[in-house]
Amino acid sequence: MIRIEQLDGLEVLDSRGRPTVAATMVVKPGVRVSISVPSGASIGKAEAQELRDGGRRFGGFGCRAAIASILGPISTAVARESFENQEHLDTRLCELDGSPNKSHLGANAILAVSLAFARAAAKVRKQELFDYFASLLPESRPALPQLSVNLFSGGKHAFGQVSIQDLLVVPSKCLSIADQLAVVYEVYQNAAAIAAKRYQSRALTADEGGLAPPFKTSAEMFETAAEAVEAAGYQLGADIRLAVDVASSHFVQPHGSYRLDGQTLRPNELIDCIAQWAETYPLVSVEDGLSEDDWTHWPDLRKRLNDGTLTLADDLTCTNPERIRRAIDFAAANALLLKVNQIGTVSEAKNAYLIAREAGWKISVSARSGETEDDWLADLAVGWNGDFIKVGSITQSERLSKYNRLLTIEHEFESRFSRLQP
Ligand code: 2PG
Ligand code: MG
Image (cartoon, rainbow, N blue to C red; front, side):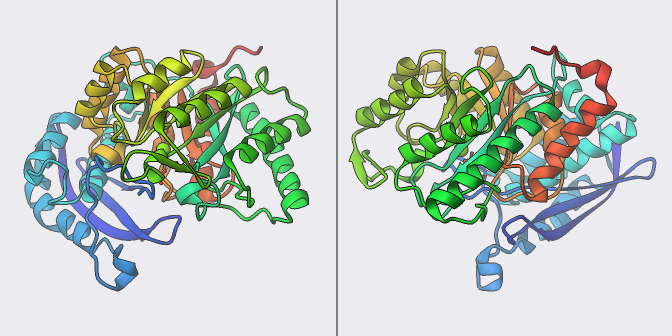
């Protein structure tokens, strides 16, 4: 049993300068913890709803209403109450909200309280946060994830200079986290140098810290990434693979075709285009290759990519157990992008995770484009044995706090997480 003594909420700023929610929880015996929650830009329609104030203040993005949820109804319901476990608290929070998408109290308010409880419970039990997250699963097998690191950004994260949102590099999983980061650094530096020479573009960064030179097409983005890998002295395929977040929900047209880099493509033509990327480059995963409503064509894409390249669902599934079940039934994907704030509580995210795992899916634990310096995501990825973690690039402290936490876990728990060298 954990008794929540006090709960407080505070509006803080995320990496885009927008407000987000932080919560502080005091639990018996005098343990005090704080946590903050992230927020997306390329938001799926089925995501749990954040509560935003609207109006002029912060362009409508203010979170005072969400803070009022924490200080008002949530505190009234949970402060000076005892909870058996995470599930007990999260169920109480969902009941209290009562809406299907947390629009009443706000998913941002609810998640902050759910996560604060997780951090407090770990502290009470004198556990590392990753061990606490692991203990929520029926089988606990914490492990360090493989990094998938943003190199180039487009779409909603970079003023749409090309349609696709994210091109990522994925170093070999045989390497330690420290060595994976060193490899990524070299590729990043070479990519920045190529961008400077070819596009006279300074290494200005997009929302997730990635580079965003003025590529004319997505194909050019792929070619330049491959060139940067080679210029860094690595072999594409053997040493480093690529991954892409097409984020196509953001360039689908009302009639179901796609507007990619100025061209209109029917779904089958977009699948052809993606399949060609996967034939040309060693692609670990294609995320949101089709839009969140295009249930008809997702199975075609999955078939076309085969098992060599994962069909990774983000906006399609929104970490939502029902949508994940549907995607499993449709054979629409074989990997889940897990974002806790898409569903709104730790326990519901755990259910989403378990359903996907049961179907044999791979899991990529993901940050959002609007992040804070909080590092709980690294613990979640380790605790839940994520196959991948997606945090953004290797610049900007809200990204680095997660990488640095992974480095710390690797260092402090070396004997538990040692990796076989190639
Ligand atoms: C995504 C995420 C993270 P956002 O689409 O996968 O890259 O973006 O947080 O803006 O939804
Ligand atoms: Mg995505």
